[in-house]
Amino acid sequence: DQQVKQNSPSLSVQEGRISILNCDYTNSMFDYFLWYKKYPAEGPTFLISISSIKDKNEDGRFTVFLNKSAKHLSLHIVPSQPGDSAVYFCAASLTGTASKLTFGTGTRLQVTL
Amino acid sequence: DAGITQSPRHKVTETGTPVTLRCHQTENHRYMYWYRQDPGHGLRLIHYSYGVKDTDKGEVSDGYSVSRSKTEDFLLTLESATSSQTSVYFCAARQSGNEKLFFGSGTQLSVL
Image 1 (cartoon, each protein chain N blue to C red):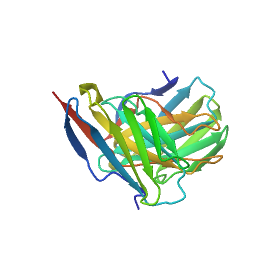
Image 2: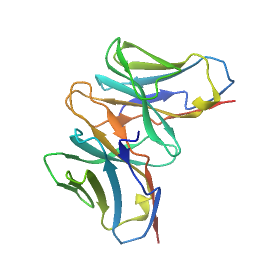
Image 3: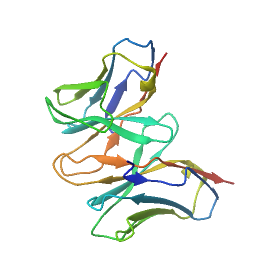
């Protein structure tokens, strides 16, 4: 049972436009959410996170929105750049002593010129 | 640089042989994790450790074992490799009180 879902396997966006990546989760106990970015042949790298007590967090071109009632989060990238082309994973956590991240299946973003 | 090194980076082995993957970290992270990445499944947790000699199973632990005899090293062993264990394996680590995981560069394992 996939507790964290990314229903769009791929997304193509023009350079300069907004990229919106979506993620849904089923476990209402999750209280911390993260986005990771992964280039080929490299490990995932942390991008941005949000606690369940917030509904928005910004870091430069990246903004994560959390809608707890809908169990939905999204990552907005504005403006999109060719270097943003990568696979993006959302992840959710039950914070605690030995918390573990549960990852979605990933969305491949391609930013075209 | 997250200070996490995985070895080997690539390995090809035959069905039925034992395989050990190594993860070494230099940042004194308390928690360490092994994930596998497969198309259509994202990253799935195999095993994790919350301290030296303290380990627990993840969602896809069958066929795998782990050991952590030192803070800096976390070993993943496939006792008898099967073709279904062909995957990319990632080690990750984090500090106490911080949910952010740092990942190694991965090990591409092919079981023929």
